Length: 277
Image (cartoon, rainbow, N blue to C red; front, side):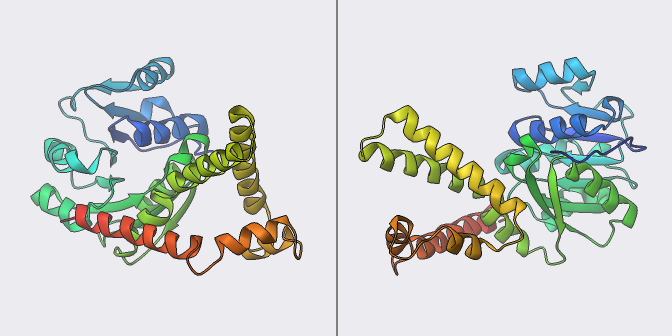
């Protein structure tokens, strides 16, 4: 369930309406952000996004119109094209604008360098794709030029797609990227593996995948609603010498899931750091 953003008295430029940009836009509209306050800049938005913008009356342009001066510019483009896209939109980043990046690996200093004399308030943010269903989580880091009002506005927007956390140390964003930014893919792969293992034990493919999907999503919702830790919830479902204990003996072995996940997250963080180079 999304949190309502209510009416806004500020304007937003969303640069990029792909998977993440589209998820954010959808959340804003569902949360009550007026379509009139949003302008999308994207030369070729996906058909579903184009349809949603048309249905809600969201203005969309290939490039920023003359005299466009938004309060917030959110760049939701891939890291590989981020620099050129930001450079092409320097003109809309005025002294009162806060520039927000949701691209992995793009540092505040990188953005400031590209913006040059237009550099001011900058926020580096890492959301994740469950924002599509209002269950995302975003972690943000702001430079010193970001005002309390600007921080509140960004939190308001991001809460329409899930939870929001702020960190003071920008270096933590690479770790955030590795855990929650990339994390949904780990969970989807877990469901794939569970389904494949079920099929190996004789389950029909459709049933195996349904069991895996529902188990992963149901366990996630149980964990979200429970006051218990993940460790305690695991213990609650594990009977001594039972079937779950037998499976966990494999997963929790010295060469089991924990070291593999640590290696995977370290690799993701390293790649995030490389993208900032």
